[in-house]
Image (cartoon, rainbow, N blue to C red; front, side):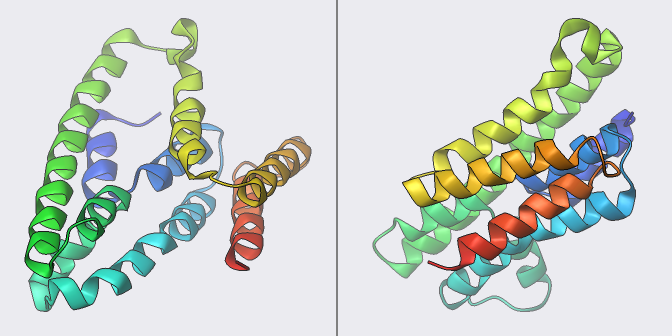
Length: 185
């Protein structure tokens, strides 16, 4: 179980929804920190690719580059790349990135306070919230039959591995499967 401070620090330092949900899911299931970190890192690789795409637009170095990397997420990249010129792309990137960062962390704090007040989330059926939120992040990205098939295979593999491997291993394995097969486009 994460404390309010740990929950808030996770959101402040690891600003990537899918990676956060993976860490919480793995640690909550009794998995190791190494498994959680490895999975979060694999899921976060796409943000590095976004950074490569945005680097010529943002043209930042030093501390500004570190700050920009923290808010390089799906939303800031998508809104930025939809703009018609580099000035608007840069503005859209920062407005979206900081806006999402501020509200994500505000609601993480409020959620952590609420969670500490209600006690055991499984009593309320809230133990399904992390998997449901993760599905909510993944579902919109399944835009074609190939991606849907890769995801279905990953789900089946996770279900097969869960009873026979330590917590976290099924997620790492399925993320690797998705990366390997998803890379070939």
